Length: 135
Image 1 (cartoon, rainbow, N blue to C red):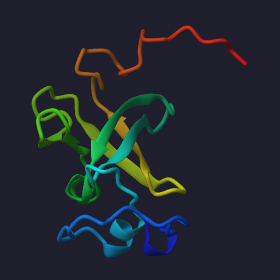
Image 2 (image 1 turned 180 degrees about the horizontal axis):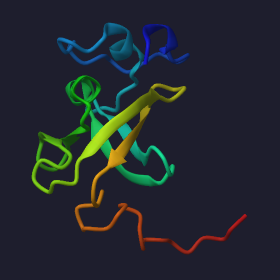
Image 3 (image 1 turned 180 degrees about the vertical axis):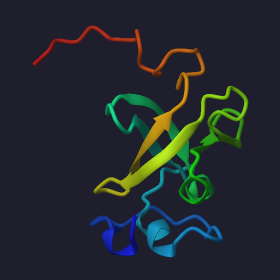
């Protein structure tokens, strides 16, 4: 993502959390965070477009993701940062990161090594279909 490609949301953004050293101010300003200071991060396999999982990032997690080549999340339940694969070996290598038009979601395209889900399935959505009328 370049500074030129970051566009500001048309609506008034949520209060910006304290600046994280290293996170580009233009990127930080474009983020529209929830009340906890988080942005949803959809994780997608870069070559198959398979949606693997959803995680949450704050400014620091996003900075770590953009600057290290590995995906880092904020755990809402454990209230700590976690880098995907550090304990399981099922790492996510960053291929690209995009911000959606409203600034409230990220699309992180990765090369997933092993299972993406903590249950051991390839994706967090595998085998969890809900009954829905197809349109």
